[in-house]
Image 1: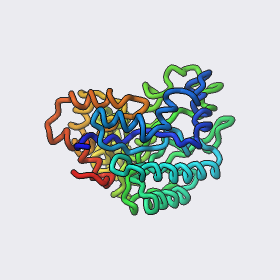
Image 2 (image 1 turned 90 degrees about the vertical axis):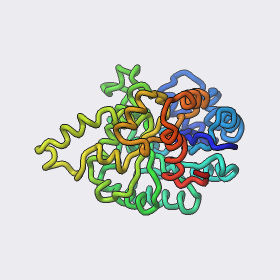
Image 3 (image 1 turned 60 degrees about the vertical axis):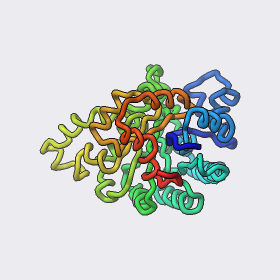
Length: 340
C-alpha cells in the first residue's frame, strides 16, 4: 500500500491466552463473558478485520504486542516465563505471514533480570522482534497484601545492559492493579471509578517511569531507549515542576541520577499518541521534548483505527513534523523494514 501511518501500541491476544485474559478481565468487567466479547474477537484477529481497517484508513504498519498485563500479571515465575516464550513464538510467526504490515514487541517475564535478558535476546536475535513491551510492574505475589517488582531495582541492571547491547526500545505500558489491591483497604478498593485508562493507568505508570529516569540506569546505559504511550503518561506536562524541585541543591546532592527528568525525556524517552488524540497536548509535547521524540499510535482495539486516523488526518502540524511523527521516527527507532 502507499506510505501511511505506523501505529506502535496495538494489542493482540494469543488464542492460548483466552482463559488468562478472562481471569484478568474479571477485575474490570465483572459479570461479562469476556471470552465471547467483541473486544476479545478484535484482539484475536490480526489478518482479517484488523488489516481491512488498516487498509481502509491508511495505516501502513502496526507494531503488535500482547495485551496487558501479559507476563507481568503472572505471579508464578515458571508460568510467566512459559507465557512469554509461547506468545513470542506465536506472535513472531503471525508477523512473518505479512512482514510488510506487522512487527512485534517481545513479552518477557520480569521475575528475574537475567531470565528476562535471555528471553529478550532470543526474541530479538532468533525471532526478529523489534523491542520489548513491559506492562508496568511484575506481580510477584497476588494474594494477601501482594508484592510487586519495579524495574529500577539493582537486580534488573543485567536486563538494561542487554537492552542497550541489542539496541531495541522498551515500551512501558500500563496495567490494572493486582486483584488484592482492589480489596479491603487497597487504595482503589473504594474508588473503582478511577480504574483504567482515564486515571489509574497514567498515575501508576508515571510513578514507574519517574523511577526509571531517576535511578541512574540511563547514566549507566546511555543508549537505552524507553517509550511511553498516552502522551508520555502525562509526564511532559509536569516536567518543569519535576525538574524545578529535582534540581534543588538538597535533591541534587543525593539523587541517584546525574541529570534531571527533562534531560532523559530528550535523550532516552519517546512518547506516543496512543489513545490520546489531543492536538493541543501533542503540540505541547513537541515544544517540551521535540518532534523527534514523538510517535503515532492508536491503542487498537481499545481505541478504533478510524478515530485515530481521522484525528491524525485533521491535525495541523508542519509537514516535516507530521511525517516524522507518523512514520519516520518509528522506522528509525525500531529499525522497521519500511522506506523512509
